[in-house]
Length: 265
View (cartoon, rainbow, N blue to C red):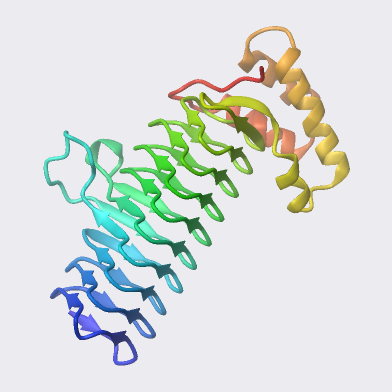
């Protein structure tokens, strides 16, 4: 067990032998830090936080009360193999969030990027890959093997089906069940998620230029109403555009998909 002399650990908390607690960390009352856990500089754990497994948490991350981080996967095939959870820097993990380690079949690692916000009660399952600046709202459930790219917002009480990919800049409206991949900058709404347009509010907030938004609108119309299969339309887009945002959509659609795609209605 290594606890830096500048770390502030409440005497009621349990730090198991082998854990690493770095400089400036704060561990509040009644926390449990497991033997394979590594907390980087200035990680803050409020009261009653449980961190277990082979879990690494990046600097300046805050974890709020009753979160359970690094517990074993909720997968009946899991037989106690050594797998991991890697969480990046400056994340905010709110009350009652649960994040599981990976499975051998899924690559062995669940990974969270930097500057994410996990709101109260949300769940991130085994082998999920969550990129930077992602927001997962209260009580949303991210199933195993899901890939979430940068700057995605998943609304409250959503369910994201296993193996689904959410493209960068997409937004999923509250109470949606998403069973297929969502293109970058897509807007999904409805109880059985429908691709209902582009995340125009998010694009404007990100400072995307008007001509780029116009190009995205035209690309979405072509994907919605063009001839041929969805991938054929995307391939034609690739041949007709040099816009980097449209190319993000093309590359996503032409990539590997285990769940096919939500297509424009």
